[in-house]
Amino acid sequence: MTKTYGKTKILTGLNITIEDGQFVVLIGPSGCGKTTTLKTVNRLIEPDSGEILIDGKNIMETDKVELRRRIGYVIQQIGLFPNMTVAQNVCVVPRLLKYPKERCNEIVEKMLSLVHMEQYADKYPSELSGGQQQRIGVLRALAASPPIVLMDEPFGALDPVTRESLQDEIKDLQKKLGKTILFVTHDMSEALKLADLILFMDAGQIIQAASPEEMLENPANDLVRSFLGKQLAESNVPLKVEHYLRTNIRTVQKNRGILECAEKMARSNVDTLIVVDEDKRYAGTVSIADIHKWKQDLRSIEPLVRQTMMTVRIGEDARTCIDHLIETGENYVVVLNEDDTVAGIITKTSIARAVAENLWGDA
Amino acid sequence: MAALLATYGALLWRAIWVHLAYVAGAVAAGFVMGLLLGVLLSRVPRISGVLIPLLSVFQTIPGLVFIGLLFLWLGMQPATVLIALSIYAMFPILKNTYAGILGVDERYLEAARGCGMSAFQQLTRVELPLAMPMILAGVRMAAVYTVSWAVLAAMIGLGGLGDFVYQGTSSNNNTLILLGAIPAAVLAVVIGSAIDILARRITPRGLQGGTKL
Figure 1 (cartoon, rainbow over the protein chains, first blue to last red):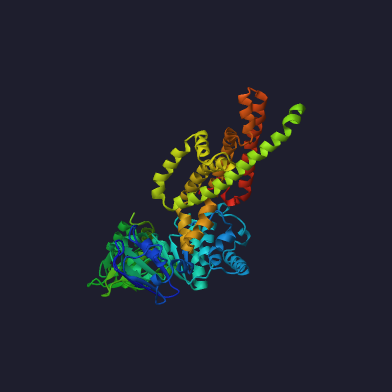
Figure 2: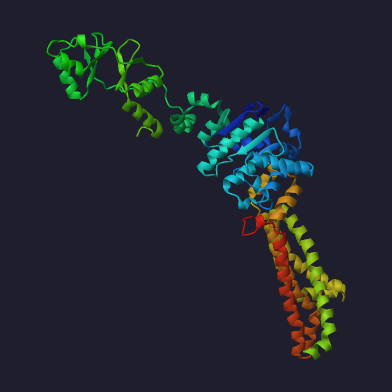
């Protein structure tokens, strides 16, 4: 499926190709032209210039009414016809297409079973909850099995819990039925959850067209980044050790005296110290227990230095450190730079702090 | 009472039927015209914004004057009365049809277009059904008014319950006035209730209970 079109007042030089079976989400600030773009596809709005091709065929050459019957359409305000029952609403398009009655009934049954609402067939929209209404709204769009479905902020008016479950359902349906879906939203988490391809729009132009992963990793500009803002933190929990690092640590050179070390530990209220050599490279750790045991016999800590602490390099996956800390009950993992100098340590507290910052920002 | 009925019973019965025929004919014709014009005007709301207030001015011309004018033109025949009553019956239906269609929420129209309804399908499947409660309210108003306006038919000697009222006033006979007035009042109430029941029957459950248009 290709759609290309040129300049309108609100849309400038859009040019994008959408593959069959893709879940495409249009997102952007209000007034960016995302809804306009959507509505040009079923000709509720017609572009001043340019063309939209579906399967290589220019939609301007198709009859408007015919075109719309072959494209599903779901709107934010749901818009179920209040004078029709649920079954009649679901069957609006098949009836417009003059399907025989038995086929319409089959479709209604099949559609309602998709969302487990068979028992609601003879109810009126006003007798349903908002979430149920929009489920029927989606079914109405799907009833005549259109290959393409347009959705204009369909879940925007629903409460968060209902929205989540409808998102799951629509993603499920899309995969099951292999539809191409164009979906407008201003909610980035919704976009990230549903999309195969996100089209980020601003001022009538596509700023970035990318998969959710790609967009998270490489936002095209600050606007995209700010939209990603909260979601970035939530869904892209950093995985590298440096994100969990505690850097204000005390080290001691390995030729220092035992008493000096003991005093340093007491002062900073720790029971081990990280030992480095003359070039500040990591040498090991020394524990208060060893110092108490040997302080009569030794002057320098050098013989007491052990290399039993787990060490990792900057840039490695933090998960193994976290697992290690949890499994062994050790207090920390030592993180080394490329040149073997000490970058910092990872403790359970530093992990907790990093996670908290990700969730709630730098509070 | 028995004597009264013996004297006037047959006449009264006939008058009621004539009256009913006027009402039924006028409301039916008014309904067709009002619905058609209301729909047409709703297609061009910009023009209607000017036209409808003008029509309302016309509506304020007293029925008596209008029937008199038509009488001069068409002479004494039932058509004169029917035309006058039909035009008066048309106004509330026209206005309510227009307002009802314009009051249909944009989201239903967008949904209808998005589903691939043609303009005509959109009108018959969405706009008119949604405006129906309001249109029926207009019909009710028209019917109840027409019952009282039809009394004027007697003015040009064309029967109905007005005959009794007319004769009563000219001969100073209160019984005759009441004999015309009471059935007319009862007729208005009965017709109003009948339309209410009908409206409730044909309005889908989904549109009842104050559903927003």
